[in-house]
Image 1 (tube, helix red, strand yellow):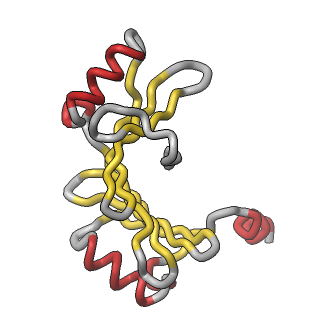
Image 2 (cartoon, one colour; image 1 turned 180 degrees about the horizontal axis):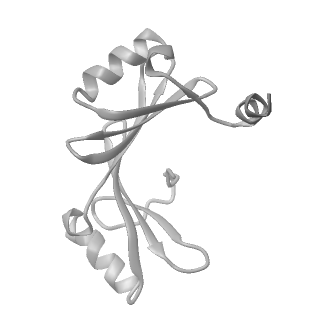
Length: 140
Protein backbone atom coordinates (compact mmCIF):
# COMPACT_ATOMS: atom_id res chain seq x y z
CA UNK A 1 0.00 0.00 0.00
CA UNK A 2 2.74 2.46 0.93
CA UNK A 3 4.64 1.76 -2.29
CA UNK A 4 1.59 2.58 -4.39
CA UNK A 5 1.21 5.89 -2.57
CA UNK A 6 4.83 6.79 -3.24
CA UNK A 7 4.56 5.92 -6.91
CA UNK A 8 1.40 7.96 -7.40
CA UNK A 9 3.02 11.02 -5.79
CA UNK A 10 5.93 10.91 -8.21
CA UNK A 11 6.05 13.56 -10.93
CA UNK A 12 7.39 11.00 -13.40
CA UNK A 13 5.87 7.54 -13.56
CA UNK A 14 8.02 4.60 -14.65
CA UNK A 15 6.40 2.70 -17.50
CA UNK A 16 7.46 -0.19 -19.68
CA UNK A 17 8.30 0.69 -23.25
CA UNK A 18 5.41 -1.55 -24.30
CA UNK A 19 3.08 0.71 -22.29
CA UNK A 20 3.98 3.78 -24.35
CA UNK A 21 1.84 4.70 -27.37
CA UNK A 22 2.63 2.72 -30.50
CA UNK A 23 3.71 5.91 -32.30
CA UNK A 24 6.29 6.56 -29.55
CA UNK A 25 7.62 2.99 -29.70
CA UNK A 26 7.91 3.10 -33.49
CA UNK A 27 9.67 6.48 -33.51
CA UNK A 28 12.07 5.51 -30.70
CA UNK A 29 13.00 2.18 -32.31
CA UNK A 30 13.57 3.86 -35.68
CA UNK A 31 15.76 6.67 -34.31
CA UNK A 32 17.68 4.70 -31.68
CA UNK A 33 17.88 1.20 -33.14
CA UNK A 34 20.16 -0.95 -30.99
CA UNK A 35 19.45 0.90 -27.74
CA UNK A 36 20.05 -1.15 -24.59
CA UNK A 37 19.23 -0.78 -20.90
CA UNK A 38 16.13 1.21 -21.85
CA UNK A 39 14.16 2.81 -19.01
CA UNK A 40 11.02 4.82 -19.69
CA UNK A 41 9.14 7.43 -17.67
CA UNK A 42 5.90 9.23 -18.41
CA UNK A 43 5.38 12.85 -17.42
CA UNK A 44 1.97 13.99 -18.61
CA UNK A 45 1.98 13.87 -22.40
CA UNK A 46 5.75 13.28 -22.58
CA UNK A 47 7.74 10.05 -22.53
CA UNK A 48 11.38 10.15 -21.51
CA UNK A 49 13.80 7.37 -22.36
CA UNK A 50 17.11 6.72 -20.60
CA UNK A 51 19.27 4.23 -22.47
CA UNK A 52 22.67 3.28 -23.81
CA UNK A 53 23.59 3.28 -27.47
CA UNK A 54 27.01 1.97 -28.45
CA UNK A 55 28.04 2.24 -24.79
CA UNK A 56 27.10 5.94 -24.53
CA UNK A 57 24.43 7.29 -22.13
CA UNK A 58 21.47 8.90 -23.91
CA UNK A 59 18.16 10.48 -22.97
CA UNK A 60 15.33 11.21 -25.38
CA UNK A 61 11.96 12.85 -24.91
CA UNK A 62 8.92 12.15 -27.09
CA UNK A 63 5.39 13.50 -27.28
CA UNK A 64 2.63 10.89 -27.16
CA UNK A 65 2.10 11.29 -30.93
CA UNK A 66 5.65 10.01 -31.55
CA UNK A 67 7.29 13.36 -32.26
CA UNK A 68 10.81 13.63 -30.87
CA UNK A 69 11.08 16.72 -28.63
CA UNK A 70 14.79 16.51 -27.83
CA UNK A 71 17.62 14.12 -27.05
CA UNK A 72 21.06 14.29 -25.50
CA UNK A 73 24.09 12.11 -25.02
CA UNK A 74 27.32 12.19 -23.05
CA UNK A 75 30.50 13.53 -24.61
CA UNK A 76 34.12 13.77 -23.60
CA UNK A 77 35.23 17.36 -22.98
CA UNK A 78 37.97 16.92 -25.57
CA UNK A 79 35.38 16.28 -28.32
CA UNK A 80 33.36 19.50 -28.01
CA UNK A 81 34.10 22.43 -30.32
CA UNK A 82 37.36 24.23 -29.56
CA UNK A 83 35.52 27.55 -29.13
CA UNK A 84 33.58 26.10 -26.18
CA UNK A 85 36.72 24.61 -24.61
CA UNK A 86 38.43 28.00 -24.93
CA UNK A 87 35.47 29.80 -23.31
CA UNK A 88 35.38 27.33 -20.39
CA UNK A 89 39.14 27.59 -19.84
CA UNK A 90 39.00 31.40 -19.88
CA UNK A 91 35.88 31.92 -17.76
CA UNK A 92 36.14 29.00 -15.35
CA UNK A 93 39.88 28.58 -14.85
CA UNK A 94 40.65 26.16 -12.04
CA UNK A 95 37.14 24.67 -12.04
CA UNK A 96 36.43 21.03 -12.85
CA UNK A 97 34.01 20.06 -15.60
CA UNK A 98 31.66 17.39 -14.22
CA UNK A 99 29.60 16.59 -17.30
CA UNK A 100 29.43 17.40 -21.01
CA UNK A 101 26.50 16.51 -23.24
CA UNK A 102 25.39 17.20 -26.78
CA UNK A 103 21.75 18.36 -26.79
CA UNK A 104 19.67 18.21 -29.97
CA UNK A 105 16.36 20.05 -30.23
CA UNK A 106 14.84 19.78 -33.69
CA UNK A 107 17.71 20.37 -36.10
CA UNK A 108 19.68 22.54 -33.65
CA UNK A 109 22.63 21.22 -31.66
CA UNK A 110 23.81 22.64 -28.34
CA UNK A 111 26.40 21.62 -25.76
CA UNK A 112 25.52 21.34 -22.08
CA UNK A 113 28.36 21.70 -19.59
CA UNK A 114 28.16 21.20 -15.83
CA UNK A 115 31.01 22.80 -13.88
CA UNK A 116 31.79 21.83 -10.30
CA UNK A 117 31.30 24.87 -8.07
CA UNK A 118 30.41 23.65 -4.57
CA UNK A 119 27.87 23.96 -3.14
CA UNK A 120 26.03 24.73 -6.41
CA UNK A 121 27.22 23.45 -9.75
CA UNK A 122 27.18 25.80 -12.73
CA UNK A 123 25.04 24.50 -15.61
CA UNK A 124 25.58 26.13 -19.00
CA UNK A 125 24.28 25.68 -22.53
CA UNK A 126 26.59 26.68 -25.38
CA UNK A 127 26.17 27.16 -29.10
CA UNK A 128 28.81 25.49 -31.28
CA UNK A 129 30.57 28.85 -31.76
CA UNK A 130 31.34 29.04 -28.02
CA UNK A 131 28.68 31.61 -27.14
CA UNK A 132 26.38 31.00 -24.20
CA UNK A 133 22.80 30.28 -25.16
CA UNK A 134 20.43 31.95 -22.71
CA UNK A 135 17.23 30.83 -24.46
CA UNK A 136 17.75 27.07 -24.16
CA UNK A 137 17.16 25.60 -20.72
CA UNK A 138 19.74 23.15 -19.35
CA UNK A 139 18.13 19.70 -19.43
CA UNK A 140 18.94 17.76 -16.26
